[in-house]
Length: 173
Image (cartoon, rainbow, N blue to C red; front, side):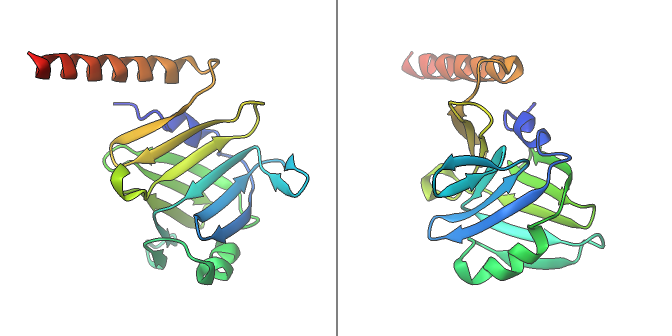
């Protein structure tokens, strides 16, 4: 199966990571050129909002950082590892819907979502369009608003919706 967030993750490759922010609602990382989102906030072309477990590993697969939820006390450490790096690889692990981002071939950032009921997810925002598209990912679940121009995502969502309709019809019988 092709995870719908895969196309979003692939857009990060080659872009600079910057703008790490941590607050009570999790952590955001911006990628690519700066854009003025509103008078008080700059955004990247793409943003990732992490409200779940985050781990950082080095090239030797040694654990550098691990938290079940990013909190303000983690800011300085995460900022040092992330800001100013370039995304060399990015993908979604279909086994557990985790987001994997390799930063400057040095650090692997992994974000592990939980179930939708826990609210521990990761969300990808495409800020390049007037109506920003997004994809929120939990374990084996996802939702969002995708731009019509991305035909692969639309086809995958249509197939998923058709399967859900068939399952609910079968349960009613």
